[in-house]
Amino acid sequence: MKLEQLRSDLHAYLRKHQLVLKWNKAAKIFEKDPRHPSLHFELLEPHWRGIYSFRIDRKYRAHFFITERNTAEIFMITNHYKK
Image 1: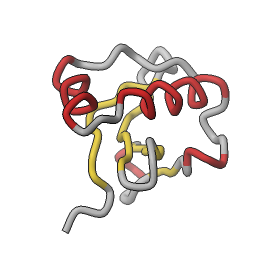
Image 2: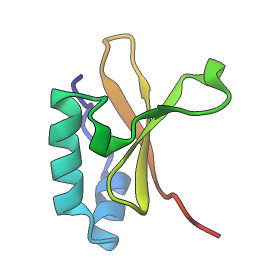
Image 3: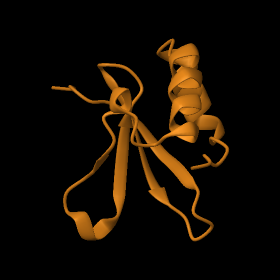
Image 4: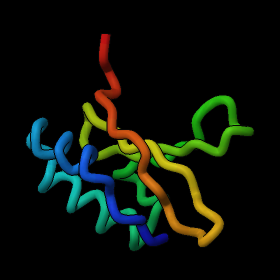
């Protein structure tokens, strides 16, 4: 599945948290096989919203939805274990 181009604020977040290389690796794997085991791809609750996520690394996840063009649009990158 193809990824839509990231917004500038998401690029800034990746740079700020030193995730650019990890993002590039995860994005490449995602485009080849979105359900690759290392990505921990999941449909988030509630399922009817159609929001998915995949792992960038153990701490950070990318949240996305699938567009009408059958592409993935990342709308948020989060610290998965924020307290």
